[in-house]
Image 1: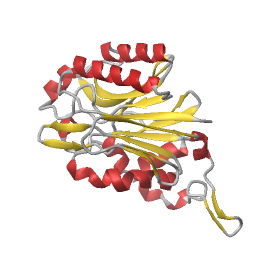
Image 2: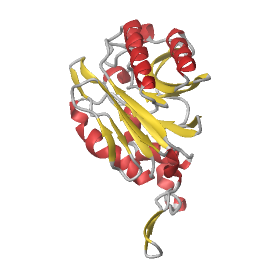
Image 3: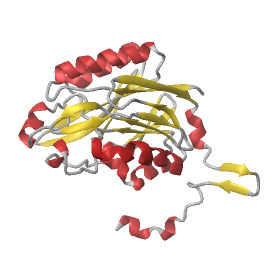
Image 4: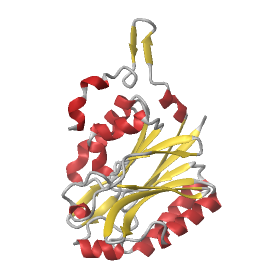
Amino acid sequence: MDWTLAAVQMDCRLMETEKNLAAVVDRLRIAASRGADFVAFPECILTGYCLPDRETAMRVAQSVPGPATDVLAAECRTLKIFAGVGHLERDGDRVFNVYTLFGPQGLVANYRKIHLPHVGVDCFIDRGDKPFEVHDCGGVKIGVGICFDNSFPESVRIMALMGADVVLQPTNWATQAMKNATLVAPVRAFENHIFYAAIDRIGDEGGHHFIGRSSIINCVGDFLAFADHDREEIITSTFDPTVARQKRTVNIPGVYEIDRINWRRPEMYGRLTT
């Protein structure tokens, strides 16, 4: 099956949710007009990332469902398209860094970032309280890990074991994270035999310069599309996501075959859960 993924590399305005939402909707429509089946946006693109304190994060965050997600759900219904958008969620007295998935039927799922680095808004918000999941988006199985989540190989591996065809990494990579863009992302695709998309922002915020370099990567770690450093752009790639389900790689039949999923030895990995 042919399936087109669009990754939107863009800047945003800190704490200006309405303006950021309008910019996201505009780019969602552009990507839809180019034939995208799924449109992926960066981490915290509706709010910005370098908020000064928890109180500000609570003030900027919205519930899910809420005003911003209602707008995006309506757009996806109208465009008959799937999308993922990063923002902050307020749930009672808690606040989370989240990535919400939408589709032609409206809101599909809401993922709360599990691993929090000591940088930006993640310094003082709440850790995700639900495990990783994989979601059916029109017959394609999508997993999500936000930025630092995917620095832990277990995160992507568990989604691969749950049947993910594609794993998304919405992120806010600053200058120090260059190797994540050029090295770690393709390794995550290769070691799990999945398609992978890293969706980064650009611009400057809170003393950080965001590097862009968003990418879409195939199951053997090759870049299918790669964005520039400091430019807003929408990159797209069309591929068959079901290739990710064929885990056994046959280099020479009967002589050189590899399966990095089904040939695991879980009984030897007990320390991973301690």
